[in-house]
Image 1 (spheres, rainbow, N blue to C red):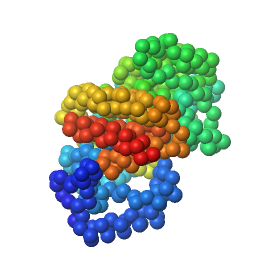
Image 2: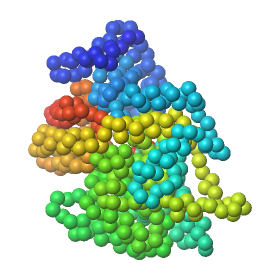
Image 3: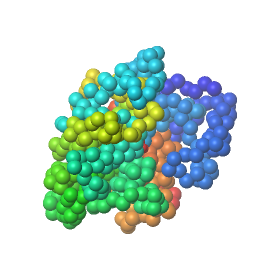
Image 4: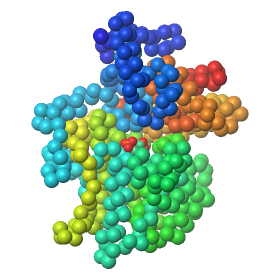
Length: 473
Ligand SMILES: Cc1ncc(COP(=O)(O)O)c(C=O)c1O
């Protein structure tokens, strides 16, 4: 099988759709892989009956912000391969760093041993993170970073002198998403994903999140006061408050009211609880700052990182803690203050090498500085092309995190069963762009490396795809 070279421009049909460039042998090989996928693979968050009924798109390789399928067709990676790619695919310096680490060792355990890139990366993360976070606990996904944070917060209070077992409650937010492990589901607030597991979960209080509403101050929103009351009522009982700072991702890219995070941090501190910032989605430049907490000068007690940590290369996560939290776990061996928690591939050296190279890239390429005009362009294009669109009733987000809420022609919400978001992403795919919906919200989350022409194309194709999805319906 010989797919077209990545530098070759993909042929397009008149409608701008990616044209197949492969000879019959390549098409046969692609069909064989598709058969294997349909026969043996169970895909995440995927209605499998429908998956089996449609020809699957199978990616073979990628370069920059483009993915290539088995037949050599190119697609713009409009969601950063599920919100994690930062500098583009096959970034030469990250490729080199992973290859160099491979010549040293691919994996050794962190239980009882250290490794070189994990130690270096921990020091870099502490320098980079909001002030006060001094210790790095590794794991391998966003869910496990959150799971570790929840258990650390819970155990921390049990190990105070004297112990504070009454501080065992968590406060989370409505529509929050923190991952799919049971602790993360317990603090999740999305009925579609979480309701069925209710009996498996621990109870957590849920507060409403005040949204960014033009012209309405955060203090004047009823959700703000409700949240404050919920925290004050639990003073002395809360272990921690967990929040997706600035933007709730899976909720549909919901921008919190400016100023809310700072207020929340203040109430949490006043209630004596720990603040857990889940920056799995917002971290590493997504909102225009390295970490979303920086927008409001907030330093949490625990910070969860994953996704963009390795530039989107390899599974790695980190839960950062303050010295105060870390010290809660120190003591004589017999005191059993140890954090008995950890995963086999924790702190994997290849993943840590990728993360170090990604952080070097941020510095060398001045990624965040160069991102500013790109963010301005993205939002200009969104407003110009989708501002008055009859089927888009809200354009929201921050930086390179965008949610477009779809509606019917009368501006009303569309029933979930209509799969409007899914129809849009199918249209986009036919036009050579990969998007992913969250119900009736179309998400745009391009790699930070995406340049102006591709940003313009991303928005233009999205607008055309929305129009087409409703025209055919
Ligand atoms: C805010 C947030 N936390 C946690 C997670 C879970 O991360 P993972 O899918 O790597 O387990 C996600 C995933 O989208 C997320 O957006």
